[in-house]
Length: 292
Ligand code: G4P
Image (cartoon, rainbow, N blue to C red; front, side, top):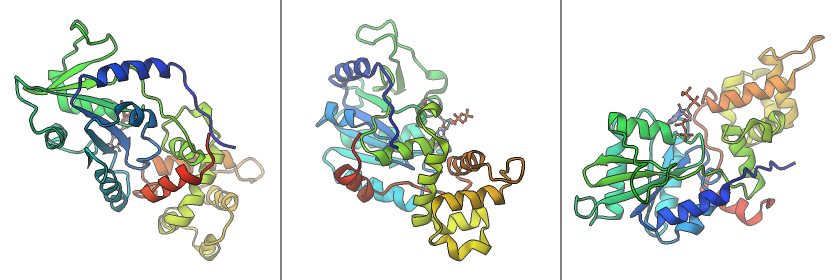
């Protein structure tokens, strides 16, 4: 069963974004480095077309560094696009953004030719954390200025460099089933939209294929190590539940609790630095995956 997630008001955000995009020099899209394809919004691609684009792979502290590099390279093959990895421990994120935007638009960024940058990202990707780190006390709400909507904010990163926050909320748009599972695993869509067990089983299937040492290490399922190779995902979930004491009265495994533990271990990177999709896998899902 695929995850369906169609929050309302997307058309309002779309219109506001299209309007704002006309007057900015660079569009920054923040994505989650653990799922860079699935956490991007395909609507932006349609709307922005040739606009210079900076992809920020955020939460890179939680992601697989090798795969983060692969995604950066994949993005940078595209015209007018740069990609940087960030996380909330970065000491000078504003400098990193400013430099990357200047590389895309070298003639802007002065008082007479200011750089206007729009920052977008699906909820929970870390946009507020980044903005708060960058602007601190210099945060400038621009609600009274003409052309700046009530829901939009403008921040000054340095003289001649203005950052506009997305008008409205850019919900993820799930177009293939696997993206839904990955967004749910990362905690990027509402809890009521999915079933923890189903998402944990999908996650375990992927981890068994790509991150088996991390699984072995975290759950210390040594006696079943050989079987782990071929263990059906639901049996693995049971084994994890047994190991972690997720039990119901009478000693049966509480699979809901076990699923929650697995998801929590992934989200907190207790399982290790894991990325749920490579550029090749993501492209392949778009071509062959179950379309929603
Ligand atoms: P948003 O504005 O895009 O919706 O996201 P927000 O900044 O609110 O961040 C969502 C959650 O992600 C927060 O955790 C935040 O601390 C965490 N986060 C943001 N950037 C990073 C990062 O680079 N690395 C890691 N590991 N986490 C990051 P939370 O649990 O919802 O809130 P809190 O308990 O941290 O306050």
